Length: 406
Length: 90
Image (cartoon, rainbow over all chains, first blue to last red; front, top):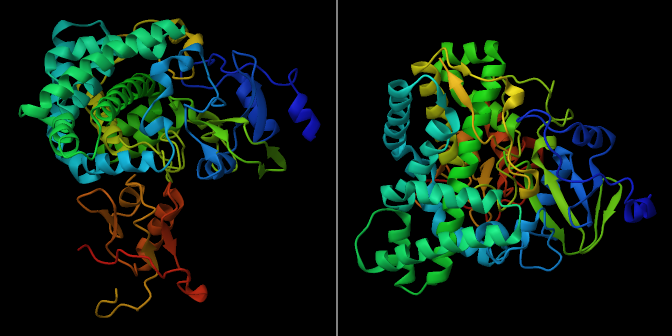
């Protein structure tokens, strides 16, 4: 069995593969998930790594200290060429281990606590209202991605970081190029543009008063010597990109899932108190990052009758863990009445999403407002014509545009 | 250290603020039992929740990504509670 796992190139299907529907996993992942909680898959560069599809096994590994998130390690698995770009290798928070990771997270936790996020509710509601008003004024039709799903979280994260409003389109476009690049060079140049922009902003904020997290960290931490300027720029980059791209995709794919299940949508529309549970079901179902983490083992680890060897790449599939029928009853059903929130869409372990309370609130306000103000919203094209992101860019899911009418 | 009037000396719910990463899963799952302080870290509001809140506290302990919540279920006592902090919001 061990020998098969080491050798099993022929039995290790390519990863990632395109989804069958924008919020459903490919058949290959389902087959792997049914066969065993751990499988072998082959990355674009020919490397064979573990794909963990079981919920319990994924959680156990994400909490294991013998698993590293350090993207600077030479044995860290690259999911696509863009992962080999310099900007993707030194990644604070997401791509670092303790103690550096913990120091950065400690600086940021206050700004993303539930209480601080709750204070943003009127701001988020204003932003959502603004874009719904605009859709109603200019449409139908509309492109839900361009006109709603993308600008809402972009504006909100601008507020949190303290970015000038007029820079919205620049960073949306540069973030898109960073994450959807299919070559190392394209990703690097988009990343350098964003870093240059945030570098200038963070320098300016050190001496001038300015709102938001970048200003606070520049004046309190960088000026006080507890954080380097370059780490502040890195932190701003990670929060900016992670803070709007994933939420934008979840708004778009969540809207799609709700439209595909009219009886579930009607339940949500009839009962405002049902919206938070609907948000959790959307998160479980669409799992826009697909992976709850990509890691490398720093020691041999025995799990589920297999041995993960030191140096092995380990991919934790949120998409499949969220459909593990040992944990989720009728896992294939989209059911907004579920309780328990046992999904890995925000990850697990010390790297679990810093901005999850913010994401939850944005999704709650976005779905409730959108379907209250435009109750007869519907797709303007067949769902199978929606273009997904380029497969060669990695595992982040989403649609490029989503024509809607009402 | 932590006992307040009318409460057992060993609370049934404890949280390790050193392990806490501020994900807020607990405050979301069981807002009557857990909260976050101004820095975003766990505070146990009710170390001995009634049966109505116990299930929510169990969900919080299960979902905590840092495994920072310890529940003592009756017979076993509050083993490992030494060094745990966070009874009352300070």
